[in-house]
Length: 118
Length: 186
Ligand SMILES: [Fe+2]
Ligand SMILES: [Fe+2]
Image 1 (cartoon, helix red, strand yellow):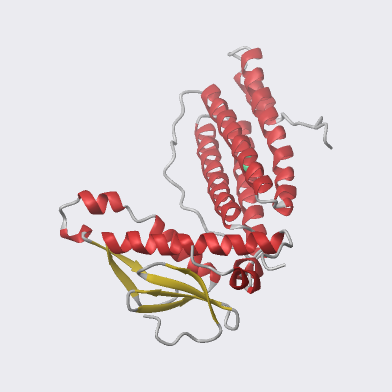
Image 2 (image 1 turned 90 degrees about the vertical axis):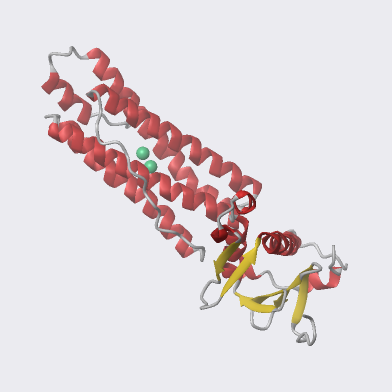
């Protein structure tokens, strides 16, 4: 999963299942999850996170309908989509929410003119 | 958590580079756009009801209100776009087309305005939490607008109580002429 990471990639958040990087050269957020690799603009990343957040996992868990075994999430501005099981949704949420928190922390630090290193 | 202070500190804030509006504010404003458009739709239904029941002046009043509400929505819409945020064209649910009486029409109008006022106030508290003074500034315009809208709806209900029921034509005319020119902030 993390074979050769480009030098411009900065790790935002990592879990056992995946990692989110930010590339300040391309202004992209990069999501690596299982064996997928997806690049997002900041806007698309937020939109995708909201999509993942709004999946009704209760319904997925309770339903006996085969269609509810997986959730299909179309990636913004792309032909591709994720086909995710309940378990994968939960893992993806953890990763995306962790990344969101770190990005917010970064924003807060910049906003108040603070720096962690000084 | 897995991050090194260095990393976070030297990283661009990509969301901020795109827009000055935070996600929570963007979400709230999009909900408000929807609410204004729902108001517009409700007022149009009220205008239609008044029109077909012979209350021509009240109909005119609500046609105008309906357009005003659309303008309120558009003001937010353009604001979001201008700030680099995303504005969504909202879904409007089906709304009631029938009313029991002229009084119930105006009662509905007042209730709608009160819920809009409450909603505007809630967004202001979100702005304060997020230190978003620009959006708060915009919302101040809506605060005044709501004072006016609530005043007018209340005054209309008063007139309905004050004017005898057999003077329908006079009442209708009177209702449509209610204005608010005493706003203490202006
Ligand atoms: Fe309005
Ligand atoms: Fe209004």
